[in-house]
Length: 88
Image (tube, rainbow, N blue to C red; front, side, top):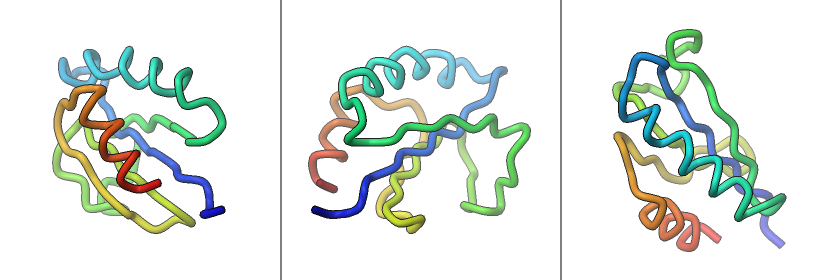
């Protein structure tokens, strides 16, 4: 079995797209359960250079700490699930 996939969501409280993404990410977290770890980081409080972030929201898909994929900007739940399926 491959190592667990982690999704790191960078968001900002002032960003409308981030606010719209929040319920989608909560739904995905509940839907996926323990098979995928989803964490949120406030971009205003994070080191953006760590992952070369330019856009919020940004979703980083990590396995063993290594970036496997990235989605920038507001994305649909279906787009996120399709990417997760491709990384499984």
